[in-house]
Image (cartoon, rainbow, N blue to C red; front, side, top):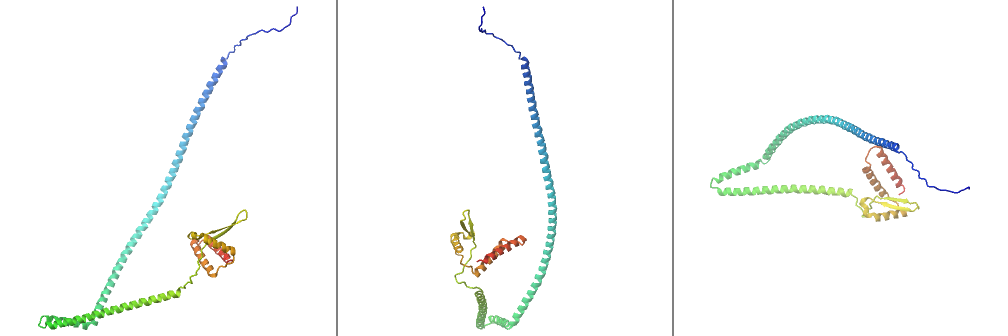
Length: 312
């Protein structure tokens, strides 16, 4: 009798796989990788050591070469400077010897000259003494005779006569002293007169040379006035003064802005001359060179000032 249907049956299948060859190959591969890693590390360490050693060698070579070059250069400079110093010392020794020789010659010349002038002054003194004695010979004789008479009278009974004679001599001596004082006073008066006359002439010369001011003299202050425009075409004004006039910044700025706003006041010829003198003094101070560049700068500044002076 035919039969159809579906039947199920549980079947357990056990598969045994031999992994020993694979595990062995993996182990061999691991050993190879470990060996390669160790080789790479050893090679890296050897390479680093070689690089460090080469770097030390290169550095030592460079440092030795640098210091050798510097040492050689310093030795060369030292030798050159030593030659220069030796030459200068030799020149100084020669000049010192020349100066000592010159000093010795000057001392000898001074000794001869002083001796000659000393002899001349002694002769003048002797001649003056002889002339004074010749001029006042009578006075000297009188004094000598009076002294002799006084001595003789002191040893005699004429003591009263000697006293009277001494009194007269004292009066004469006092009159001579008074005459001398009067002569000195006259000389002092003459010197004072000469001094006062010279002083009066000097004051007159100064009065003739100095022009008195009226009290309304004007002084020019150098300023730098700038006008700049921003992106909105608005004009900005700035007035820059030297440092010594910083306290007058606001006052001078207002005057300058007012003068530029009015544009009616003209600078006088005297003020232009003062400004020209001040400009030339500043140019001589700040551009003192004689080269072509300094000459061009001075010419350009003078040209700019002359062009500006035509509009003032």
